[in-house]
Image: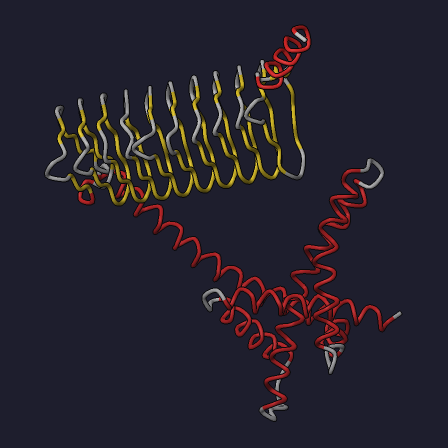
Length: 379
């Protein structure tokens, strides 16, 4: 009876005690869990749709998943990459987090915390043993920082003591009533948007680092140069298409007329054909380039493809002009005048914000399909 009791107690202790597991790599499409009674006695590499670390990792943790939950203990560094990160456990050294939404509640980071994300929240019951360095769209920190605080983002709110210096850069920066900076506070670029609560304190100096005037002047000059280049490019594109269109009428008048004529009551067919050519040609070129014997063919097809795209714009420009003249019952025109009107309309449409680009792209597909249909008819 005594022996049976001892064996039962021993079995119970084994069952209740954490079970050691060798270092491992885990990955899968579903949920991966390190249970509460599980111990990984080395570094852990884990990836999946959802990762839950509830047990103990005696080493570093590297996690990548859509959702990551850490409620257990990590004795080493922790690196986590995902969409939504929730940290409520203990990390023995540095932590590196990258995600869309990062939340720390009742967490303990023994060393420095590094984060980058869209929305970042560090609760007041989180213990930070080192520095807090973070970049994001919206950052809210209510945890005491044992060393330095460095934050960059659109909206920054910090409401807790900082035992070192603080460096903040953003459009909207606020220090709450519980904030106290033991050393210097530095604003970068946006001092006019910095707000310090009356109850907050800065024991060191407050430094404002604004954008140098030379940077502003250089940025203004660069923007003007880009605009000027855009104007020159549009004019050059317009004149060159007129020139190429005129040469095409002179040398390839019959094939050009055949391509335009193929659009008669077949615009949708041309659109579908052109779209297929646009979609299929690039991957076909890539596949050819990956083979040794296909590289020469790919080098031959690529310039032909570029020429066809340009020719498609000429075809659709001439088709647009002839459609307009036909609707207006204007018959006394010359091919060169039709080309001039069509190219002008095509480039004016491209100037329309947003929609003009898509309209010109669809028109190019139709022109490309028209060339294909005309070549098909001549066979």
